[in-house]
Length: 330
Image (cartoon, rainbow, N blue to C red):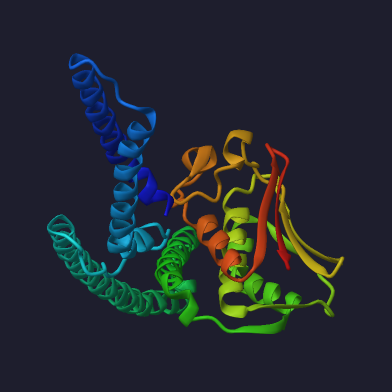
């Protein structure tokens, strides 16, 4: 109603100005012939057109009511009502054309996205096979190869494996609602399994885990996705460890009905200007540029996964002292 009244203001003002103009002309004519217009007649000449105007506006409001009602809503308009005049017929026709074009483009993009998703999934799984074969070959030929060469190749294979896992989980995150299973699991068991996967990385970098998590702590999460989050955090902790770093600490606490997991290292730390952006996609920061190459996607995906699982992920750090990643199970 208010939109209709707002649109009717210019027309109403113009109508009233014309009524006053006519009354003024009549008054001027009567003045010329030597008489005057009585006030009651002038008021009658003004009220009668106003009644006609009111009836016209009521008729026009009920005619356009459907449009004002549907267009005043905040939701998107899928279908326009029957147009009451030629102008709105043109508007409706243009709206339908644009809607059909938009729907067609969206369906095309969805189809392309679906094809890209399946291609990436298939490609990653195809790449995992030769990586696994090369890893087994390196283990088999461990004593027939120079130690430095073997360690270098082993490290490159691990980086390749981690890159494939990163791409795999990034593509799966788009369909997270189809690929997760929440269950109650032992927090220490999950962390211990991830630590086993990084055994060679710990030995190669001379950094070792310090696991002090109570066996009785049970959390509700998706085991597969949460393992990926721990893996990314552990990858960064090892990657940015210093020469004198020797421990990565895993601690937990239960207070006020919430379980908290903390992963702390004594590496390079995160500069203050970077700490607020570590969860941004493709952000590598000063450490990623100075020490080792980084994709800037690990912490971003970890944050997105924790949000989807209703876990809270945060980071605190002191340069050249420590970095602590805290995961709160709400």
